[in-house]
Image 1 (tube, helix red, strand yellow):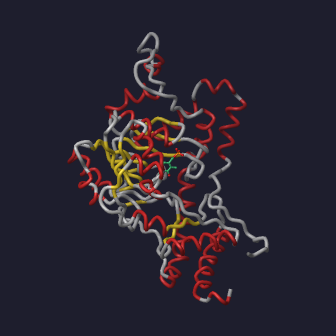
Image 2 (cartoon, protein in one colour):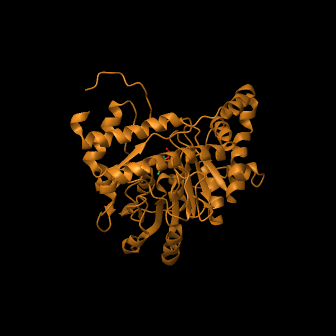
Image 3 (cartoon, helix red, strand yellow):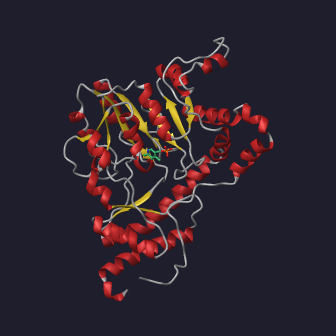
Length: 390
Ligand SMILES: *Cc1c(COP(=O)(O)O)cnc(C)c1O
């Protein structure tokens, strides 16, 4: 082991912080009376509704948005939901909590998103919905997904947790399914540390969403003067984002384009700097389909296999930078084995997830740090080629 203390320490992520958040949070802290008014929740809601042209609800997390989606779709025990196994656990849990069975189908090798060609064979009379995950903020083939859900009378839910500001054929991710779910967790491009959004793309969900959102009461109607009192009328929970977090988030929404552009420019820096190395040493870079505008949420490499990927992560750890993987495919987990099934054969999900490794990428990362990481990538492969010259 190298006992020298590494000179540069680069984490995988530092939560986005622009300084602008402070203005709005301070405003609230200096005027506690404002907390009653929900001013920042209102400002954020208006920002999204004007960008998306669709009604939205600000939630405590994308997990809450997914759970609210499962309630809105009236998912019943025994219903089936098709989704990728290469996903964060909350996309499956939201439906398992309603008694549904996750049915996983394989992802595409090139972008880790659901392969639309494999979905039809997994549809049964019990199938209720397709839940797509836009991995790394790169859109799924939404044209194909919409065609499938229309043909079979299924709901389409977008887990666009990673997809803020990203687009497909000019449309924002999260605005194309019946429901869209976005995350403002600290790992995401825009963050209020914990927070989420539900986009209601189909008007028939609006009234019931307002009720489920308010603990299953008609409080919203009451506040609008449409009812003399409010009481318990349906299922529900407290899904609401706190006003302090809305103030924090609003500071980032004002800089949403700037944050996204900074990330894209860093992502492109990685891509162009690593392209010749990828060709020389036989690893893969992310592929972006032509009709998508991604948001540079993740920069990843794919190594030849798991052994090489693990060696790469370990090499980075020793050099003081973090390059890690995520998502053990859900069908291969203890709880996944009990609750779910994988339809068809797993050609790519397991193998590709084992090859994938993420490089540090965050709003405050500096060019010289990216340069340093790219140099480390080159060093790792040279060490493999000439292991005795280390
Ligand atoms: C982060 C993430 C979630 C969960 O978001 P939270 O806001 O932390 O609940 C769900 N799905 C995907 C794909 C994610 O990346």
